[in-house]
Amino acid sequence: MRQETHFSEFLEGSINVPNRGQIFKGKVVRIDKDDVFIDFGFKSEGVAPVNEFSGKNGEPEVAIGDEVDVILEKWVDDSGLPKLSKKGADIMREHERVEQIFQNKELIKGNIKEKVNGGLIVDIGEKIELMAFLPASQIDLRPQHNLDKFIGKNIQAKIVKLTERGIVLSIRTYLEEQREASRKKVLSTLEEGKIVSGKVVKILDQGAFIDLDGLEGFLPISEISWGRVRHPSDVINFDETIKVKVIKIESDTRITLGLKQTKPDPWTLVERKYKPGSKVRGKVVSIVDFGIFVELEPGVEGLVHTSEISWLKRFRHPSEVVNIGRRVETMVIEVDSEKKRIALSLKQIDPSPWEIFKEQFPPGSRINGKVKNVNEKGVFVELGEDLVGLVRPTEITWKGRVDPKEFFAGDQEIEVVVLNVDEKKQKIGLGIKQLNRDPWEEALETCRPGETALTGKVVSIKDRGIVVELENEIEGYIRSSEFDPGTGKELNSTIKIGDIITAQVTGFNRRNKQVYLSKKKYEEQLERERISSFLTSQGDSSVKLGELLEKELRSITKKD
Image (cartoon, rainbow, N blue to C red; front, side):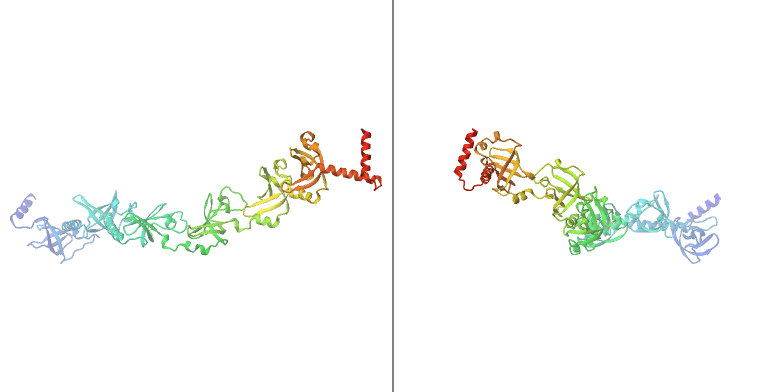
């Protein structure tokens, strides 16, 4: 064997033979079970293993007359014929092709075969299998976690590394180049107010990022819909293509988009559709401390302030009255389309309890109630369920302002008179003294100056006169000049608090509701009445006054 090897080497060196490893074009002249015989331009045919002519599917792909590329591995093999290799030629051709693609920075096609640690194995060979590595980070612009879904797919990629140790591919590099080219193109045509198409690439709580062919814009949640949006995913989906309006361009990296602007603004018709005083139905979409938001139509909401929820029902939070999602009927109070505000009312759907009360109990009506509270402001009287009226301190007695606590206590049943009902301020004025006629008015009718005499108790003594409490809590006033000269000068020494005095009515102080009295005129009246009575008792109307006086003086002298 050693002699044969030496002989073949001697033979190769002694005659002109082709170089080993060189590619030749040859023609298939014969095929047997194990070998393919090829005429490759020299006197002797060469032989190559038949299994090197199998395609990627494993089936033989050779026929007599086919032109094939082969390399010379050995001038003479064991059979005495040149040993050729189609596989070696294919490998060299593939490497030449891959090298050219790498140098030209072109895309190479491949088929993903399997998943390995850190990435995928890709077959990039045309005629034979030639494996390259595609890192997971280079599969797409965004991280891909499920690599199994790529197995079996055909791809195009850039060769980013080519060494004797292997080939590394990148789809991401290619996509980034495409995106950058597209971004520049889009940016050159983009302007505020323009409607463009884009793909949803990321959804956040605050909004969504939209890919505009390589240029990303941000769609805030407030610009997604004219109506309320709890989360962007309720309206848009990941990878969905949508039309948006360019709202603002601050730079090529800060572009604000709007989705709702691609549809008519419903607020432009609000003032026509929702007139103050009209009744409308809507859905409760939000409940906050200060009220309830009601959706009247997509994009149009109104606020029911806490003060407009119920006429009488008390609650700590609006959620105690309604639930989110409930449909309610409301009344439009005010519309401001410029500020996009609609004020609504739940309670005004029904008549005000004060309106109903006023119809049932107009001013002057008598009604029974229960004392709910008593304080310096007056007596609060419960007239019905959560309907309360107020008796002010000045309306308890005709005497004037008094301390309500001296007259009433809680839970006491009392009768009152309705004085007034203010539906707007939601107040009911009540009175107790009006249950009886005003004694002052009665005094004006029954007391005649110069004729009527009244008796009362002294309640106040002053230098200029005294105050007397008469019947029915009426005050009388006697000036010091209306006493006889001796008494008038020394009121404090001659009259005491609590003394009972009778005096004649002389007039009225309507402003202070006082009856002017005169002690002096009352006594003069008494004197006249005594004289008249005496004259009547004598039976002789011709008796002269002088005689009467003389008799009176004599009687006085005898007594002395």
